[in-house]
Image 1 (cartoon, helix red, strand yellow):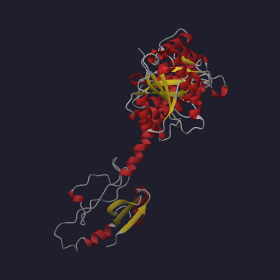
Image 2 (tube, helix red, strand yellow; image 1 turned 90 degrees about the vertical axis):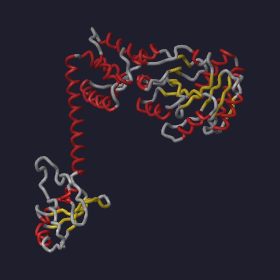
Image 3 (cartoon, helix red, strand yellow; image 1 turned 180 degrees about the vertical axis):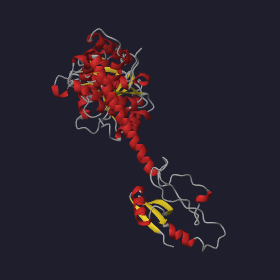
Image 4 (cartoon, helix red, strand yellow; image 1 turned 45 degrees about the vertical axis):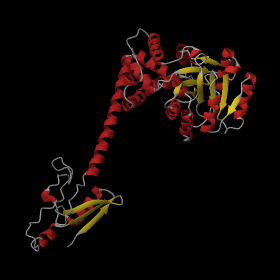
Length: 425
C-alpha cells in the first residue's frame, strides 16, 4: 500500500505539499498534530482503486474524504461533519484540518474589527473637535492635570452643554468630587482608635507618615494611649528611625519579626487606644506582599491597613500597587509626597477608580505639621492647578483623536465607567 506522509508547520503547507505530490484527487487517510507539526497520511486515487477489489470483507469500502479546493461553497477544506460513512477500514475517524485555519481567520477578523473601531472612534473625536471645540479644551485640561485618557473621555462625552470652558471644568470638578471618598475629619482614627498598619512599596514615606499620625494621637490622648510596632527588619536603620520618633513622643516602639511575634505584641497592647504598625516596604511585584497581608490578617486583632500611595508615581504604577495590596482589611489610603508631585490627577484617578477612602495627604517631612486630613474639593482644585507645563508632555490637538481612540478600546475592555466607577448623579 503506497501511503505517503506529509509533515509541515501548518495544515495549509501540508495540504500544498500533498496536492503537489499526489494531485487534487488524493485521498486523505488521517491527519494529526505531532510535536507541534501537522502530519497528513494520504494515498492517490489510483492506489485506492487498485486495492478495493482485493478486499475479502463483504462490507464496501467507504468513500474517503478527498482533497477539496479552499473556499468551496463557503466552507473550509475538510470541515464537513464526520458521519458513519466516513469511518476508515482501520477504525480511524478522519479529523478536519480546517480548525487551525479557522482560528487564524477568526483572529484576523477580530483584529480587523478592533482596527475599524479605533479608526471610527478617531474619526468621531475629530468631528467632535470641530463641532465642539470647548470639549477639546476641557479634555486637554484633564489630561494636563494627570487624569487618565479613559476617565477624561468618559466625562467629556457626558459633559452637558456649557456656555464656556470654565463652566464645563466646574461640572467636571463637581463630578470628580462626588466620586472621591474622604474621611472628612480625624475622628475616624483619633477618636475611634484601633489598630492601623501602614503598608506600601519601598520609599513611599510609611515611617514618616506613621510618626506624623503618632504625634497627632499623642496630642489628642497622650503617650500612654498609643503604641508603635515596626516590622521593618530589612531596611538599615528602619527600626532606629521609628525608635527615635517614639523617644521624642514618649512612646515605646516594639519590633516584631513574624506572625507569632505580632500576635503576642498585639495581645500585650490590647488596652491601648491606638496601635500604629509601620511595615517593611515591599515592591508591588514581590511575593512578600501576599505574605505581609497574610501576617496582618492572621492576627487575632482587627488590623486595618492604610495604603500609602506616592503621588509622584504614574497612574499605571499606582494601579498596579493597589491591585497588589488590595484585599480584606484595606481601609483606605494616604496620599504621600504631594509636595513633590508635578501632577496629582493620576493619584486621584486611581482613588476614584478603585473606590479608595482617602484618609490623609502628606506634603513634606515635618512631623506632625505636614500631614493633613484629605479635603476632596481642595485636592481636585489643586489637581487642575498643577498641570503639565512642559511642552513635551502636553498633548497637541492633532494627537487627541488617536489618544481618544485608544481610550475607547480601554473603556470597552474594562466595562463602562457609568456602571462600575463614576457616578454622574
